[in-house]
Amino acid sequence: MPRYYFHIVSSGNSVRDTRGVELAGLDAAHWHAMHLIYRLRANSRDAVEDWVIEIGDESGATPLVVLPSSVPKPRAA
Image 1: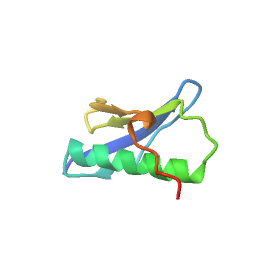
Image 2: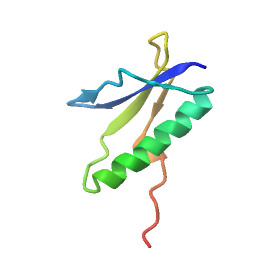
Image 3: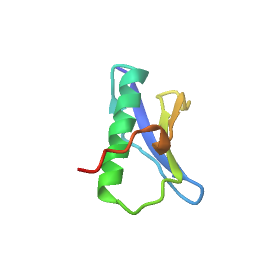
């Protein structure tokens, strides 16, 4: 299985994923990034979403970038 890396990047900072996760493919990596966005939102409710998740592969390429604005926010209960 390929390994994907999930880097959180904003205009002023970046957090590089050095471990990565083995996943079945790019579709699974996209789902994983969406899940990370939900978790980040849950842990920092007041954070401005001026960042993206760059999904890197084993070759060092970035085949996908996920914008937080593309992931629906949960409805208020």
